[in-house]
Structures are given as structure tokens and as C-alpha cells.
Length: 308
Ligand SMILES: [Zn+2]
Image 1 (cartoon, helix red, strand yellow):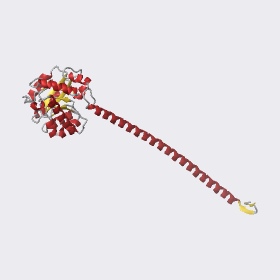
Image 2: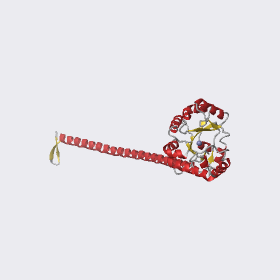
Image 3: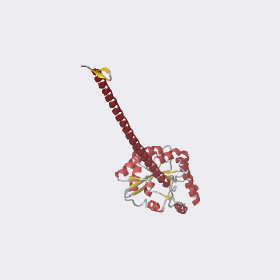
Image 4: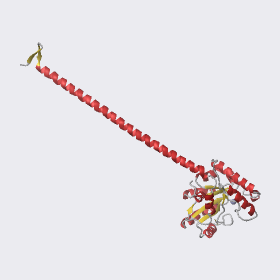
């Protein structure tokens, strides 16, 4: 009996079973699709959440990085703003002791009368290669001629000090005021050359030295006046005689050894004037000598204890 009577109609039983199977299958497929769909949307939601968290973290990290960068820039700006302030009493004491003693052996290489095209770039190249910072006592008339070399000295971290504008004794030592005028003229030229109007040379070296001679009294008075304005005057306690007759490497080294012996704190006088190529040529020997004897190379900032 394959046929049953349903609401007055004859229905094939096989067909009913078939319809039920198809319906159930369709329902299952529908359910599977539905569940899958729900699962997918949950997955998408989770992925989006994860993405959001990651983005948030990245943003936070970037914000922290930016804050650190701003802080570092602020710190650098603060150092730079104070770097050229007048010398304080505490710093003067340190500079006053520069010829006498240092706990760690140190040497300040100083070069007078430049910059010059014939010598200064070679000295700068060599110092850069050796990673040594030196001190340049720039002369106003030469700064006028070679401002880009002064800028290079500045950018490469050397100390730029003041050696007057003219180097003419009769002109500089006419009065205390003319000494100050010469300091100011050179200072302004260097400011313009380095492109920083907050720059100050801070250290003055009297042409011919700050002691003795025909202008001794005037120099002493000018020295005091400079000090009142936060400017130190520095001579030297060792030299190579590169400007006074030492015309071979051997003679330069002899003078160096003779004048530096038993000193723990050395201010070495040298020159980068246009006829002093021998000074550059002897520089490797000079530097070797100090390295072998355990000296540190310093600038006046190091002596003062200023961060730069
Ligand atoms: Zn000089």
C-alpha cells in the first residue's frame, strides 16, 4: 500500500518523504549558512577590535615618541640658550686653574690667527678623522675673509674663541675701550659667520699674550674689564714655537716635549695662519704624543664644565 488518503486527496508517500528530506536538508543548509554568517560577523568584529587595539597602541607609541623628541629638543635648546652666557664666578675659578692642575690629564689644542684657506681646512679634516675637538682663536680680519670656515669650525663642535679684530698692537692697545671694541668686532663677525646671534666667544687671547711688555698695565686693566663682562682671557702654558722659528717637524716636537713635561693641564699654542702648513703636517705626531702619554683632548667648554 503505497498510497494514503490525505484530506480527501491521494498522496504518494514516497513524494512526502522526499519533500520532507528536501525541506530538512534545505533547513540544515540554511542553518549552516546562518551560523557561518554569524560566526563570520563575530570574526570580523573581533578582527576589527584587534585592529583598533593595535592602532591605539601604535598611536600611543607615536605620541610617546613625539613627546620624547620634543623633550629632547627642549633640553638641547636649553643647553644652547645657556651655552654662550657670560662666564660665572664658579667657571672663572676653573679657568683660572687651567695652567696649574687637572685630576685627569688634559690638553687644549689652540690655533691662533686663522681661519685661512691654506691651512685651516686640512687641520679640520684631520681633527674630524681623529674625532678630536680643538679651540680656534679666530681673528676678525680672517673671519671676514673666510666666514664659511668659521661656520665649519662651529658646526664640527670646536670652540671658537676671540683673538681681536686687527691683531695690530698699536690699534688694539690704544686704550681699554679699544680692546673691548676689538673683542666686540670679532665677536659680531663670528656671530654672523655661524648664523647664531646668541653666540659669544667668551674667551679672549690678547695678541702677543696678556702679560708684560710695553702695554702691560693697559692689558691688566682690560683683562679686568673683560672679566667684569663675563669674558676670560687665556694665554698658554706650552708651545711648539711654530710661529717663532721652529721650521722642521723635529724642532716642533722638541719644543712640545720640552714645554709640556710634567704638566697635567696643557694649553698648547699653535697657529693656523696661511704660512703654517708645517703645523698641520706635524699634527699627527703632536696628537700621537698626547695620546701615548694619556691626555684627553678638551675644549674650553669642557674646562668650564658646560655641556655642549
Ligand atoms: Zn696671534
